[in-house]
Length: 90
Image 1 (spheres, rainbow, N blue to C red):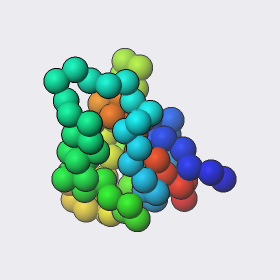
Image 2: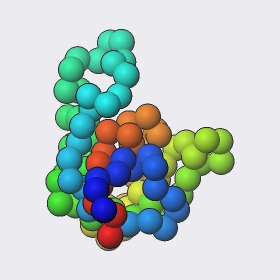
Image 3: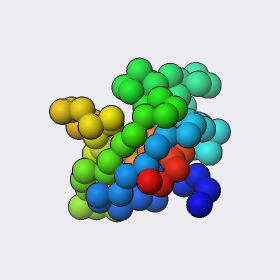
Image 4: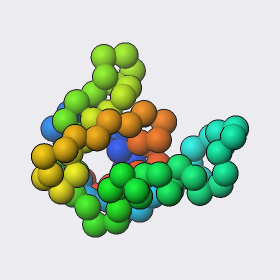
């Protein structure tokens, strides 16, 4: 199976991050090119990291909460930004 964006997964799905591709997102005014990718990397969304979808928001599955590398922390991000995180589903 090929890479799939995080925003397409369901609660309980697991995957391994293959890349961050912010070119698939609409350009946000006020943000420099590469800013979203940089912020995601700082939060721990790095290539090779394993993640599990823990929660999907009630309205349009927004926000999405994930656990990275079985840590005790859960990170929530907007569905829009989750579309830039490409995964190989495990």
